[in-house]
Image (cartoon, rainbow, N blue to C red; front, side, top):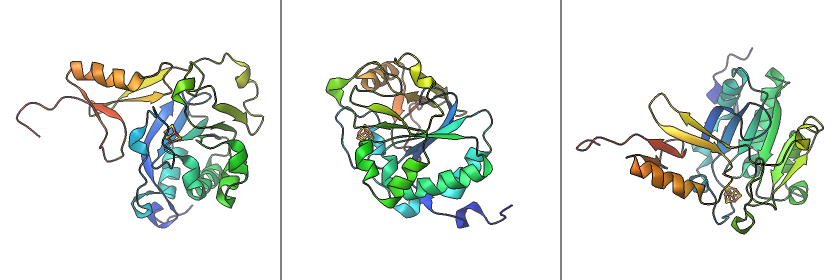
Length: 235
Ligand code: SF4
């Protein structure tokens, strides 16, 4: 047992948002980490607030994230999304190594805007991250190729089996896994998943606005959340 505080034990990961349980971004029930920062600028990206990079020192301690993941009941793995996970490959390698010391049964899946072939020629950290994944969804989102697909948004994006753990799961119909809406204890609404139709986020924002809600993009964890309207006269 390591009694050292999590903040003193490891590297930091710049995180946009986390979710305890998600059933629409990979097989089964999964925790999700959306990292902050992506070097690409895909037109129609539904996670625009995750694109700017943040100073590394402002990131969350990896050990703190491991503590959170290791304590989650009912998940079969973690999905790494973003943002671009491979832009923070070293920290994610550390996260998965620490996590599997405590929960070796958990699977790992990641998204990347880069192709698998490019990642295999990437930095040592990027190659090490690939070695720790069961599934990779690769390639940038291309709005002109948008389609109703499982776990991805456009037809150029591919699901790669990096281990055989989910070989059977990939035989299932390749259609959208849907979206997941969550309501926080503070009443804030957030969503996860890959929209089956283009323009989903703009339409969601429009409908929320008609109900007096707005999509908040400047939350401390940069998550896309709809928050209840603030009563007039208050801030
Ligand atoms: S790679 Fe992903 S996060 Fe980065 S711009 Fe493209 S869709 Fe957005």
